[in-house]
Image 1: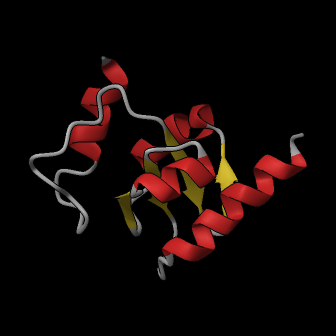
Image 2: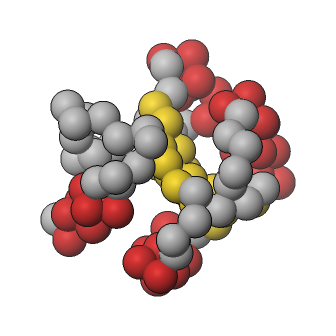
Length: 96
């Protein structure tokens, strides 16, 4: 519950904010710059971060490829969904 409240306030003014979206029961990848980060790292550092941020939702095909409902992004000026999905897929292959 605390994480959900934090995400709602963290994205209150974000470009990608969707007022009708609910983070509850969703699985997100976390990206900072051009790398995946652990959820714990994100929550420990996110409240201090004031740069580019946003989130994006994946369609059903992208969910199947990545295992995530979407991505939460910080420290990334140029967002490219295809690049982020490849990054997630590569990390998944590396962890096998």
